[in-house]
Image (cartoon, rainbow, N blue to C red):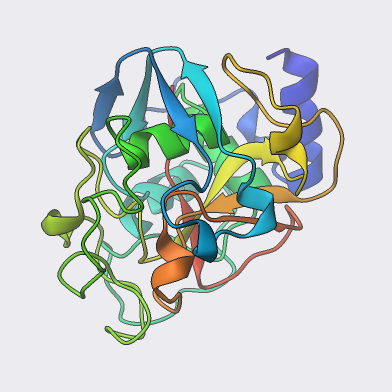
Length: 250
């Protein structure tokens, strides 16, 4: 992406510190590699539970990419704040725990953080591929079993975010954790409820026009249907919310 696009994001987020700090070293979660392959994207697992924006089910080919093992933690994000690159999160709900996922950050703040680490937000297709694993139609990262609080932090569990990476039974076949539940995650794409009707078959990056940005994965307040790998939501990219975090890709 061009420098002009980055500058636009900076202005939109009110974070002019991003430019000119190339020597600052930051850390993020470890990453897992996902090989190039095709998969079935959208809700085809239990049709009765599908929302209209998850249809039609369609085949998508995604190039090789890497994705963070966990959601970005408060500690990781705070290093970016301390470096003068990122704006502070607008709130810090729950316990004072550096291993909790950072929340209350806008889409712009999430994108700035990822770019500063030489990464980016995952596309919606990459996120779903990482969550779904092999092309076997599984509705959850761990398979077809109904969610329990051992698999994921969802409605009826803790009522708050858990520290990142504390649900190993919910691990995706590709390695990442917490792709279902805990906190919802910003991804790169603009949101269009009808996008799947004419989505490209190779490396889709979302619609060219729109207002809202996609969130994936559901959170600690979502029911079993809200943490399925195909569930999609769209929100104002300036929104900051205690139920929303992010992870990066490259």
